Amino acid sequence: MNGILPVFRRNLRESWRSLLGWTVGLAAVLFLYLPLYPSIGGNGQMQDIIDALPKQLVETIGYDQISSGAGYTQSTFYGLMGFLLLTIAAVIWGSAAIAGAEESGRAELDLAHGIGRGQYALESALAVLVRLLWLGAFSGVVVRALNDSAGLDLEGWHIVGASAALTGLAFLTASAALFAGAATGRRIWATGVGAGIAVVGYILQALAKQSKDLDWMNALSPYAWVYRQSPLAEGVDPGGLALTWGLAVAFVVASALALRARDLRG
Image (cartoon, rainbow, N blue to C red; front, side):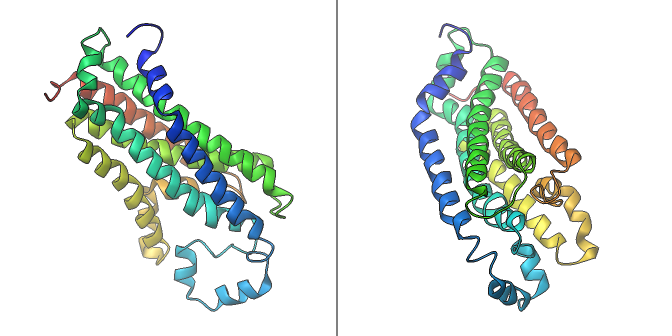
């Protein structure tokens, strides 16, 4: 393999169709949900229905602020459908990057052509990151485009912060999958670890909302790090955002070290 960043370039070249599919999927979700805000989130009758539900249930599903444009967008997209779609994409890409390539024999072939193991891991992570950055940026652009017509009344920088938070959560999931794949060479382990980070984080923040005695769980939840303070209403929490991205980068570095420290599976 020749040229600059060969693994990175090949991964992007071979994944453009799937990236296009995820982009279309995000667009479909955004164009389905956000234009409905005036008739759902902004409807006083809907708020009456929500007020009749148990408070813990409403807070768990994120509908406690659904009557505002920021709350509606957060609860329907950034905290739910967008989070779900980017998490799935992150798990698929992260588990395939090293573990999938090793199981198929491609990683061994690439390394035999003079690519260092650390370089292989870092370029694989960069390819995943670029795809997730595209999805996060695209989501933010669509939200901004629908902001006025849907009556969401969102501030531009808050949209940027929410998109950065969503992308950071997805990259943390992907980098965890990447690390598990680099450490074990097994795609099933990479998938389990990546999905586990996302699922456990979501469950912990949901449980924390049930009682003040469980509030400590928020400290263990990446989802709570970036979403406990509403990024669309109040602006993203810089500490939580930095922690999420920092942990993701740490997983990437650990992936490079783990891949260098073991023999590939035949």
